[in-house]
Each structure stands twice: as structure tokens, then as C-alpha cells.
Image (tube, rainbow, N blue to C red; front, side, top):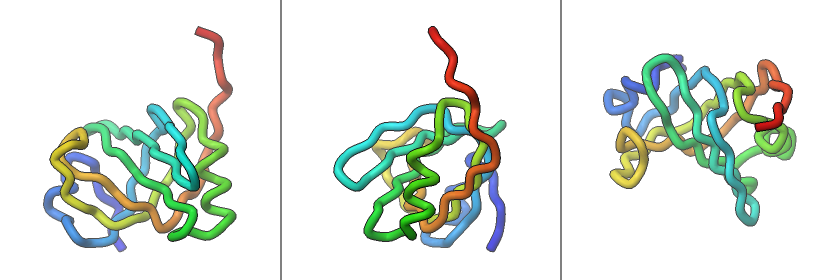
Length: 104
């Protein structure tokens, strides 16, 4: 499996890739996390569905705070509604470093 830059996702549509970067934002719904991940080349929404991932990886997704560094493995899907036109449906979430939350 290949680690790719967010700007290169179009070249990997339908394939499993690894993204490395920082959590820019996170929203949650019933059994879902929507993580906006960024690297030096752009932003990408990563969808973490508890039905399609291990309990430990789902817990990792829940721990991510703004600017936490992480590695997300998943499949690339075209979605014109998303930033950059693609999203990644996660199969694995690895926490590298949890950033301290800061008051704004």
C-alpha cells in the first residue's frame, strides 16, 4: 500500500491508500466520525464508520483533537461535494501524536 499526498488522490481513485497529516476538524454522528485531514498539499474528508473499522481504530478516531497528527488508511472515492472532489473511507486510523486542546 502506498502513502500518498492529498493532492494526488485523483490518481488513486478506487484504491486503498495511506494519508499522513493533521486533523484539521472533526464532526461526529451516530457511529461515524468525519475527520478533515490536511497535509502540505491540501485537505481531505476521511469518513470513519464504526461498522467498517476495528473498535480500537474507531476509538483512535474519537481521540483526535485539532492538529493531532495521524495516519489514516482507506479507500479513495470520488465525491464532488468534498474539498478536492475526493474522500477517503477509513479502514484504519493510527494516532501519531495527540495535540493539546487550546482555548480560543
